[in-house]
Length: 227
Length: 227
Image (cartoon, rainbow over all chains, first blue to last red; front, side, top):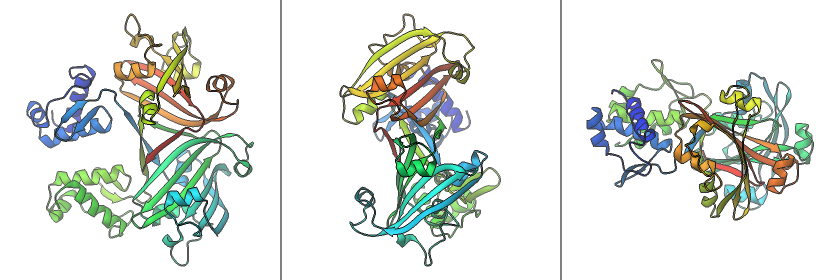
């Protein structure tokens, strides 16, 4: 064996063949390094990869076990919307529908840690793919992250400007299905109540909340990945 | 600096401070190892982590660049449904609604590489959380993966049996929003046309397709993760 991928393949083979049964403690990194004739770091890299894939459970001091119920993990890419549209071989464009200073609804403000009653920047954008509605974006943005004068969000989408200009540290993302409300239905050109795929994201920098964005996708949207 | 996390933090700081601008080539691993006084493997681990997070782009031979448009990635856990329900603090149960040998629809058969007209095992299951409908599962299963006699799928869900008994190599997963059809509406107790979150998975072993499963979740389902 030479690389960590070889070690990974052999460990995976033993798990699948049940040489190492579900729940069983496997040999330590040093023992495996000796057995395979590789550096301990190489064994570590292989085991970490299998742990990230949910096939092993690693506990500091308690050693590494074969997962009883492997939790598979899927990795989703979250590209800029323009890239996502272009990856489908389509042309991206967008229209800024609204931009205003306004007080966000309480659930949004509290999720972002914004004090009550503080005005933030509200942006409503329609993204198009080959000129057809692709996603309806509503966004609340911390104005303190913007330069003076602020960017022209009718020329560059807030989505793309933020990704390229504002570093963010943490955030979360949620996916759900929702019935189109009147505004979404109008903007996306669908019947009210249509089943639509919704993505909601919050992003924070070390200094505090940057933005909350809600994307309602036109019918037929699928998020797809390998596991 | 001692660990790879320290190297990662410093590289991240330089990217954020634009000491290393978007698109710029960063120093090689050996140069960074000398500068930081760590092993090259430590630098490699840090850069790989940042590349996996979409902040760096690594090309064999061409070196490592700061990503122009960082693609953020989110990791989703795909647990067994029982675990997912129990993680919400609820009790999982299920009812096997149907089990039959049948010929799958052409789109399913072709996605799984099953020859036309071949009968497979069809299973329809309702998952409940605290006795209330949680997800409607329809599944096509390769009977060759089952032992003789086959497991009692009214006692253990096919979902859980497969995860614990059948090793799989690859698969894919897709998420979408769909309007409830008549059968889903009846089983989940919702109005026909209700907006529902749908998960579809295919799994393959080295020997061929194992299963196609479609999960239609009761209203209010959200898939949530950190990015």
